[in-house]
Length: 486
Image (cartoon, rainbow, N blue to C red):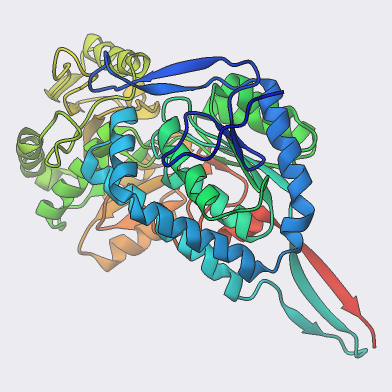
């Protein structure tokens, strides 16, 4: 029997299961290092096992009936209470996010604030229609209603360790599901703040259960567990496809948000100052560690040289360094393995003869910092043009016509996000009709999403209903049609 620890003033480095803070059943832990100062540790966290996953699912299953029967407005009250807790600790949450995964403090603050906004939006759904009413010629009444799916498992990534867990769990809870949340191995502390917020909001035991540990152990156990009704996963394409195949064989509902290779098209009539800023932010903020990052920048021939010159100047002005510095724009890569992968891709591209216009090197001798890197003269069939390099790396391309730009922009397996800068309504309309991505941006960067609108990709970038906004209802509820003949 595992020991139960009283809820602490700040998050324990423990699992949160059945309303209690508990260590892993095995007692095993792992240590998370600070990516800016790898010799410093953030803390020790539970290295959860299959038994821990099973206990969390059992707690969620036991809590489901009472939670689903609770009026939706009362469920929403717990979300608004948790939002208030997170808001009161915004600086602490942001700082912990920065030291455990390297996101610059300026971005971490925005993400922590966004998590509270997501909770409040989801709570507001309790006061909006969740069904329709129809009439038949026979006089019978027909209506639809929404019912919760059941127990949902949420498997979340390290690059948005506050926003993504919340944008999954908030609609899951408000629509009456119970949740097992598996936090990212590389960013557990931020997610445990979420668990702490709901604990302080007095959420009924078992409604939300939170686990830390390796995805290959905990995530796999959740996918296989027959008591789990649905899986929402954000991560890499290969892992996502494995989750999909395993879960659908068991009849589970599956939602995937996967990678991207997002293009930005800059037309000759664009506002170049704004386009350059959007290209820089889209490619290099968060050290390029986001699925919506700008990976390919297509610039029309007439303005290519001007755009290139301005972008290089913006890269030169950008501040790379300690993410706790509020002026730093580009912080470290999350860990040594990821750092080696990104540097390996840069060296592979350099060895292939592709021109390095900026960066391409380590930015210091201790933290996992990589200088913002810009390639050019890269063929469209090169790996840099087709494969996602999850770091501060992007490539610059010439194009002559919008026809050419759209064809080349669409010529990858991914379809998450795409952007265009133009002052032409005709070009913007064509882009909106023909760009193959789930998120389209006109005169804004490829990264970013609002809390009240759908988020998700097409092609290899996504599977199942989109996330966020009212679209979340499609995944977290079943539609029931009710006939009543008086």
